[in-house]
Image (cartoon, rainbow, N blue to C red; front, side, top):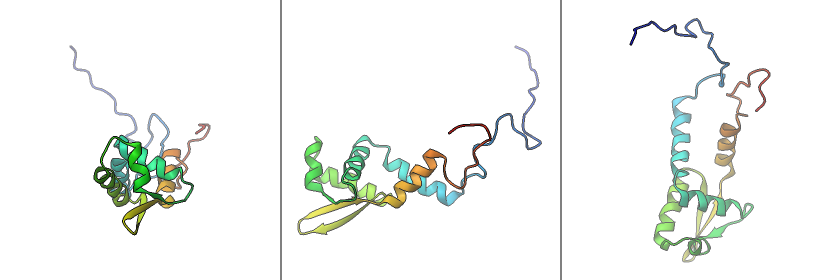
Length: 129
């Protein structure tokens, strides 16, 4: 095997490919989004969020969510707590049950990141999204 020296591209500021971002994500935003993606990294939580989102802004009771899963109500409540801590849902106690609703501010932030439509993204010329 030969030891050949490789040329490093982009040391003068020009890369081999156009930049995807106008600027890198700052630490605070990365930490915030990492919590959200971690919360969405579980299939149960992802399904719960989709069920809540399908209510079109309406509230849904944990008692309506539990039968869709082969899990206990306390386990479903734990998953919902993690979604709430990630800023994806809001909860309100009404009597003995807790009702949950989607928080569109966080889902809008996620949509911007995933769609590359955020002001922090710089769309390269001639490249369709």
